[in-house]
Image (cartoon, rainbow, N blue to C red; front, side, top):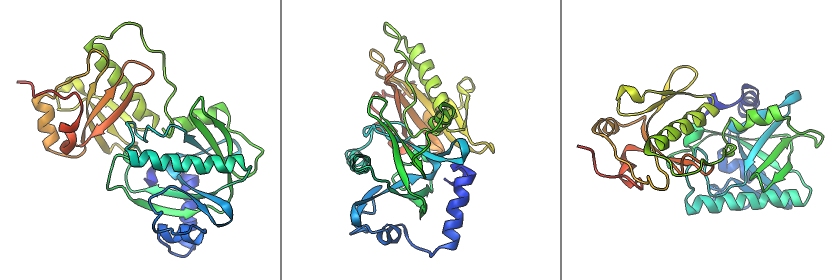
Length: 304
């Protein structure tokens, strides 16, 4: 969403949008040389005429580094989606297609064309919201290139402009906070964790996760509201009300209380947030809308 985009990046997008011809997202990539653009509209990277690679860059993840240089952290993990959780088979294939094209650009020593895109839903829910649509898509006039490609860290760095710059460690920390790549994992504790430890670790994981996006994540579990964490933006607008459940080996099931189910029935912005494999380095989470709660693995019958 626009409010998640760096103001300098958003200014460029708005200028391009307002001064250029009004075109649909499909028309934009067609004009850039993508054959069968309508059939490939759902992809997020394309091979255009002249073997030019074009890639969508979510503007929410573009970071301004030292000297005003733009860069973008690209996750090389095709299995995990933005906001946490596993990708569907279709999403995995699209991610693989994208990385294949980016790697092709890297191996050929070529730059790539970028399409800057903002979205109509919060970036943390982009891949889990089936109704998510493009808000704005504009071609960037400047060329981008892949500055680093690190399979061990499952991360690549894309840089806008000349090949004479790399982001600093401080720049990288700011970019990681935007959430486009998994956070650095901590060592897993030895021995099985108790249910209390699993739940505490799940709460800590989600609090840090949303704080990394710049959101406020308030622990309200003691108030018995039907949810445990309230996520709000800098203006105080509530984005999510999360009923948090953690699972781990030996503690793979959980229950929803009557209060949580009652809150779920009231609908948005309530979500069930299941954090798996906590505490440990492979922890990840998935959000379930009220209508999806019964699909959550490990859910047991309602507590009396």
